[in-house]
Length: 373
Image 1 (cartoon, helix red, strand yellow):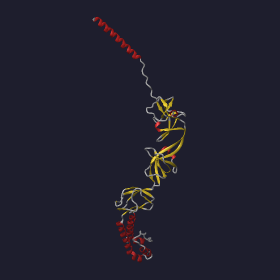
Image 2: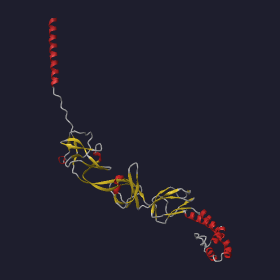
Image 3: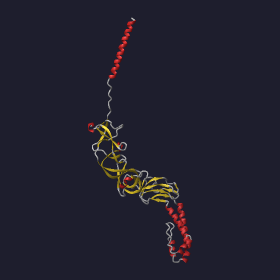
C-alpha cells in the first residue's frame, strides 16, 4: 500500500514538472505586443522666395514738443482764478493760469516808486541851475510819472557830468530798486505761453506757495515728439525731414511722423542712434507708447518667418517625406516678431508652427486643410 502511494506521487510530480516546462516554453515563444507609434500632426507652409522689404521698428513714448514745468519764483498764497487749477483744464495763449497774492509786494513796490519820485523832485532845482538844457526832459519825466503804471525808462543821459550828478544823488539806485520789484510783481501771475492744457497739478488754491516750488505742468496737446533708437548700421536710413509711419501697439491706428532731429552720438552700450520724430494727429496723448516703422532697402530672394520658429538663431525645421529635418539658414534681418532669412529653396515645406518636443528625424503628419473640411 505504501509502495503504491509513493509510485502515484512520483507520477504526479513528473506530470506537474512536464506541464510547467511546457508552459514556460510556450511563454517564451509568445509574440511581443506591438506598440503603436504616435505621429504628430504639424502645420507647414510652402516656401516661395521673393523680394522682402526690410522694415526697421523702434518703440518710444510720446512727449509734448511744447512743454513747460510751472515753478513759483515768489512767495505767497495761491489765488483761485476763473478756471479751476486742475489737470485737464485748457488755457488759451496769454490767459492766466496761476495767480499768487501780491498785496504786500505791491505795497513795497509803491513805496519804492514813491521814493524814486521824491529823489527826482529833490534834484530838480539843481538840474535847472547846473544843466538848464537838460531840465525840460527831467521835468517832462516827472510830469508823466504815474504811480499806477509801469515805470518808464529814465531820460537819456547826454554827458559824463550829468551822469555823475544823477548817480551821486541816488537816482539810479532808486530807479533800479523800484524796477526790480516791478519785475518780481509780474511773477505773481503766470500766463499761458501757448494754447495748451494742464497735465499735472501739485497745489490747490489757498496753499502757501514757496519760492522754487513746483506748481504743475503745462503742454501743447497738438504736437508731440517720439524718441526712437535705431541700430547704428542703419544710420544712412535716417535723414532730417524723412517721413515715417507710427502705429499704436494694437496696430489699429496709424500716424505719419517726420524726423526733426538726429543725435550725433552713438550709444556705447546699445550701439544705437537716437532720432526724434515729430507727429501731429488726433488721439495722441502724452506718455503714449508707440511703434515707429522705418522702411529700409528690400532683400531679394529672401523669405520672412515668425521669430519663434528659429532654432539656435540659425536653423529651421522642414518636413521631408513626413520626417522633420533641421537645416541651417542665413539670417539677414530680425525684428521683434519676425526674421528675414535666405537659404531656403522654393517649394520647401517649412514648419509653420512650433511643435513641442520636436527633433530631427521625428515622424510627422502634415495637416491637410482640404481633408479636414
